[in-house]
Image (cartoon, rainbow over all chains, first blue to last red; front, side, top):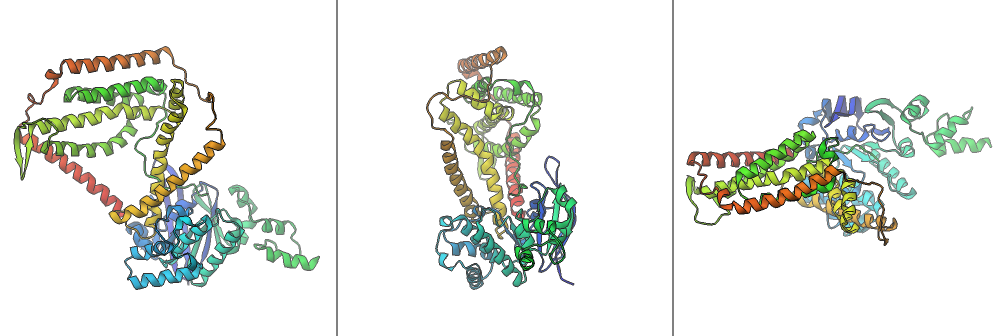
Amino acid sequence: MPEEVIVCEGLWHIYPGDVVALRDASLTIAAGEAVGIIGQNGSGKTTLVKHFNGLLKPTKGRMLVDGVDASTVGVHELSRKIGYVFQNPNHQLFAKSVTEELAFAPTNLGLEPEVVEERVERAFEFFDLGPLRDTHPYRLSFPLRKLVAMAAIYTLEPKVFVLDEPTTGQDHVGVGLVQKLVEKLRTEGATVVIVSHDMILQAESTDRLVVLWQAQIIGDAMPREIFSADELMQKTNLQPPQVTQLSRRIHRSGLPEAALRVSELAQPLASML
Amino acid sequence: MSSDVEYLPIPIIRIPGNSFFHRLHPIPKLIWVTGVIVLCFATRNPLVLGVIFLIGLLFFFVSRTWSGYRRFMGILFPISLSLMVFQSLAPAFPQPWIPVADLGPFTIYNEGVYSGLSMLARAWASSNLAILTVMTTHPSDLFAALQAAGMPYELNFMLMASLQLIPIVQREFTVVLSAQRSRGMKAHGFGAVLPSMVPVFAGTIERVQQLSMSLESRGFGSKGEKTSLRKIKAVPLDWFVGILGVVFTVVGVLLVIRYKAALDWSEVVFLPGWLSIALVIGCAVTFVTFTIVVIRRASRA
C-alpha cells in the first residue's frame, strides 16, 4: 500500500467575516500520485492546497502531512516536505542571480554549503537553466521566471510539489515544457499536485482529479471518469478538453469513449478513414 | 486564476453604511479633519485633546464604524504608549524639568509625564476624524468632490491612486511573505527583509509602469475638462457643516492662543511619584508585550 503523504480529514476553513472557503473536505494523496485540483474560481482550490504546507490552518478538522498534524508545525518546517510553487513567480524572486535564487530555500533549511551546491547543480541540470546561472531573475522573460521559480522549489527536494496554475502566461512551448517537467518529477518519485484551469494539462499529466464546487469536494476519480460525468461538468461549469468532448460525441466501436490525448483519438480515427 | 488569497486584515478600510457621516459631502469632512488636526497641534492641554478624542469616539458609534476603529486602535494604542515612556524619561519640553521619581537608572520628569499624556491624547484625537472620514467616504466620491472643488485632475488622481495602493501593497506583501515562507524562510529578523521587500517593491514598480501605460492608452493625458461618472451634489446641510468646520477651527485656534497660559497645565498638574512610575511602567509593559506578541505570531507562522 503506497504511503499516504497528505491526509485531509473533515477540513473546514472559514475566513474572517464568516466566509466559508472550505467545507468538510476529506482527501488522501499517496506518495507518487499526480493529482489535479479543478474547480471554478472561488471554489476553494487554493484554500485547500494552502493547508498542505501550513500557510493556512484548518478552522475545523485535521490536516496530516506525512503523518504529522500540520497545524502543529511551522510553514518553514513543512516546506521540507511540501514544495509550493506560487502562480506568480514575481512573488518569489528577489536574489541577484538565478544561482542565489536556487540556493535560497536549501540555505533556509540549514543545509551544509556542499549540499546546497549539489542541489543547485541538480536543479540547473533538471530544468536546463545552466546558461542563466549569473543572470538576474528580473531580466528573464515571464516563462523563464516561472521555470526559475519552480527550480527554486525543486532545491527543497520536497516529497510533494504543489503547482499553482503552472501554465498561466505560458505559450505552447512553455506549456509543453511544464508537462515534461511534471513527468520528470514523477519519474523521480515525487508526488505532484496541480491546481489549474488548464484541462489539457490536467488530462494528460494527472492520475486523478479532485473537483471542488462551492467549497466542497464533489468529485474524486480518474480524469476519464470525471470528464465523462456530464452532470458534474455542468454543475461545476467546467469543460473537458476538446479531444475528450469530440471523442464522446463521435464514440463508436473502435474509437475511445473519452480520449484524454489527441494521439488517443487520432490514430484509431485515421485508421478508419 | 485562483481567487482564494490569504490576506492580512487591513486596519483602515471603508465600511459601507447610511449614517449622517456616510451621507455627508467629503469636503466638509476634510475641513473638519484639517480643523481638528490644526487644533490638536495648537494645544498641549490633555483635557481639550481628551474631549476632542471622546467626541470622535462618539462619532464612531453613531456612524456604526466602531468595529473598524477598534481594529485601527489595536495597532495605534500600543504603539502610542511608547510616546508616554520616552517622553517621561526625555521630555520634549523646555527645561528646567522637575524630577518626580527614579526608575532604576532613569529619572521620570513631571513635564515628561505631562508631555507624554499630551502627545498620546494628540495622536488619538487628531487621528479620529481622519479615520472616520476614510471609513465613511467612498474613494470615488472623494475624487469627484475634490475635482469639483477645483483640485487639478492629475494631483487628485495621484492622491487617490496612493490611497488605493496601500491595501494593494499590503495584500502583495502578505502573498510574498507566504511564498517565501513556503521556501523555508522564517518570517522575522533581518534575513526576512530582503526576500520580502524586493518582490513587493519590484512588483509595485512594475505595476506603476503598467498602470501608466494603461492610463495613457485610455486618454489620461488628454487636455480639456474631464467629465465624471460619479457626481456629488452638496446640499445645504453640507454647506452648513463645512462653514461650521471653518468657524470651529478659527475660533478654536484663537481661543487656545488667547488662553494659552491658562491651558498650560504643565506646572499645575503634578502627578505623585507612585502614579508616574505606575503609568510609565504600565505603558512600557503594554508596549513591550504587544511587540513580543506580534513578533511571536510572525515567527510561529
